Image (tube, rainbow over all chains, first blue to last red; front, side, top):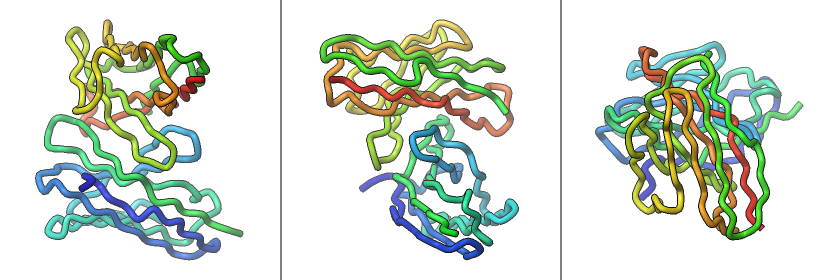
Length: 110
Length: 117
């Protein structure tokens, strides 16, 4: 079983729409959770950390459910520039190593 | 934010040759750097953890004699793919952890695309 699993998508949505997707992780001892964004053929860039109480950053809302071991990301009022692959990332314990999901592709159309 | 550079950004080489990739933290010191590999439509896979002044630790299944890592200074780690073969063609990305940064965020380099003919 993969350590982090994501729905690969793609999610094709019109501008202004809301899109949401989840990921699950297998290691219950995982300490920290993140969403990264990766554009085609580029390096991943941190979008936001995910906190236990859930958190929001502008149009992006992240939720963490430790009991069910899943993380979600919701994007409101989608922009064309939101088109990217979103990577769910989990940090194992305290050794700073990151485990990446394969990514969820989102395409926002005009 | 912190900047990490990688060189070269792209390399094409013949099978059997060795390729060296450099990862530099430009405006911070990184005692720990990480090397990842990403195949098309797959997730980034951690290959090894590079520690300044000591031997790298490799993830299970990664051949340490094939992927040589040197972390000679607080701002530079190198990955050498020895005797490269077509199956080593991939996107190699490094990341560096700013030891002073409170949340220990990792900053990623722009990646090196390796094509072995």
